[in-house]
Image (cartoon, each protein chain N blue to C red):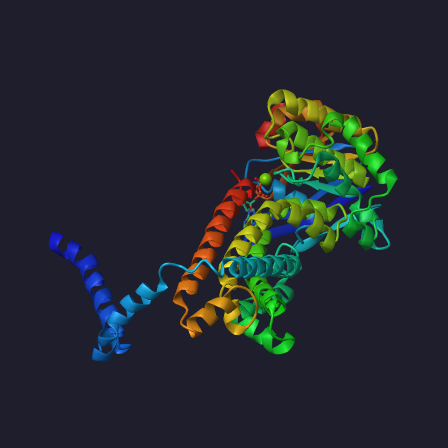
Length: 255
Length: 235
Ligand SMILES: Nc1ncnc2c1ncn2[C@@H]1O[C@H](COP(=O)(O)OP(=O)(O)O)[C@@H](O)[C@H]1O
Ligand SMILES: [Mg+2]
């Protein structure tokens, strides 16, 4: 009995380990070619330190651009996702309408932010605008879902009694649904911004603005010391924003 | 003005009727106390009267409460959980009663006519909320929230207020105060249907009493003729 009980987790762990090893082997982790390249890692690390201070001003400026892309994209997303979430919420609308907008939001979510950015690079050209739009669209899919779930949870009785007093759907949204979920909306918007700052650092890879452009360039010209500097700048900003964001969010979440 | 339930039957699930062929009038200018054990169907009855639920058979008729073939805003519904918006102020909550009279545009931009604002302020004043107009509803006590709900009904110009378990969550003294208010408002032509399971409130505050039992109206008469013993005997 005892032995059997212990067999469970151990067996699972062994299976997991086995699967991981097989997959690593499948992707060539144990091939002689890979192993022969292991010293490269040491060469890379040796070349990556100490970080080069020279590009710091440029990097700070482009990191700021990344943050602004995230801010603009998130703001745009909040403005659009509140109405979309209202149209998706069962508190205000019924099946055909809510199903359509829920489906729309889930379709938007299936495409990652970087692909949306690529799409906008193609349509509006290189630069931060593509990054803003890509970030916004992806965030709409994500925030829209979080918000309609919050809107669904608004007290039915409050909605019913205000509806009976003569309020239309728009008024219900403005005076009941949004005030009752305001703190949640703010807290999720801040969370989304925090997430988007991290996500936007790679937008430069597809030419959609921000620090990602420099990261890509340093990799291409093998300037690993500047790369380290860039990564440290990203790290500093992300950590600072994470801390500020969680402080701010705790103010808006129910105590 | 009157809400008439005529032979109303209702079931949430087929084969399990909550109300069977119930007929009952709720009139403006009087207080109807609706009694019954918990689960008897009091809330269901109020929701049917409010038009929030549709009867499976029978009808709910609004007499003198229809304007242009539509039910007017003459009915206010105060659910058991009071139904005010916690994150709005007392005055804003009272003003919600005026929404129905506004154009869509004014509703959305929140521009209430000065007349509505002064009506809302008066209602707050009347209900003893004068010092709280700018306080968020969530910071109020239970009795104060109840008053906010009445203030909204007044601003709405409601002729009949359907109030579910209106005083059940209040301490005895506060519930007496709130009920006395409803009795005063009755003289302004406003009617109340109040559900409760407290039999002792009937003689003091009710004009009529109705007891629901086993899905039917087991007793329905003038409160002055109904003794507590009589009500209890069918409870
Ligand atoms: N939404 C619902 N779905 C299914 N059954 C319900 C629902 N609401 C109430 N009921 C049932 O209907 C009966 C009457 O409920 P209710 O009208 O709330 O009674 P009361 O208000 O007198 O306590 C109860 O048996 C209750 O379980
Ligand atoms: Mg009830």
